[in-house]
Image (cartoon, rainbow, N blue to C red; front, side, top):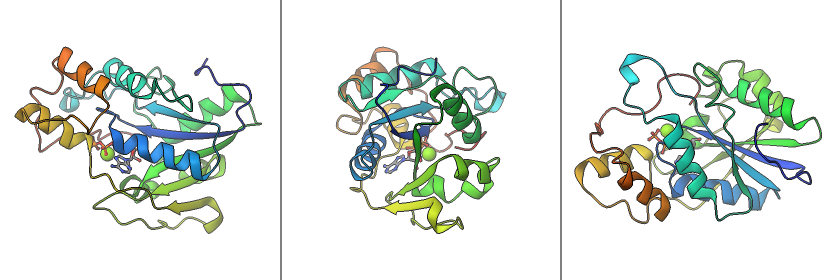
Length: 215
Ligand code: ATP
Ligand code: MG
């Protein structure tokens, strides 16, 4: 089972990401799109664990999954799926959508949510033409990035403006490593989880992220 989908869900938002860690920029994007598109639920899908040696510092999938669950626990519209972290190898959005479609059936409409930075790379995603057929794309504004249609048919994509939160996971990790505050950037429970498990204390502020897969 991908996750416990409410059977009345007909319009589903899907938000993929490394979520290392999940922060309020992710949550406000999901909330705004849910409101504007009348979505019944949004499922957060943390990417799988990259296995190459040079990216061994990426936080384990289990921690990223747990932080996503903690961050979304109080919002009845939000769920988290293990579909990408349980699939071996790098994460490609086309596989995420295929697996969700297989488990949820054809009655649920998919809306794939992406920030302006991720959207600009979509033409490099594996099988992006199939991605666009399987889900309506919703591009959201992100400070520091230009939000434009990267060359998809106009009917496949909607661009929307959301409240600007200049937060990135990279910056949160750097702040932890430097002993700077992360309060109000991530949900309180996520900050507790980070400190409890000593995550990001040795983060290299200049070089993080997930170099494999689509995101
Ligand atoms: P990192 O710095 O590690 O790349 P990130 O903050 O970019 O982390 P991701 O997990 O890479 O977070 O992003 C997942 C999705 O959320 C992407 O589509 C990204 O564009 C979007 N996103 C992340 N932060 C914001 C934000 N502050 N505002 C709008 N969209 C965001
Ligand atoms: Mg990113």
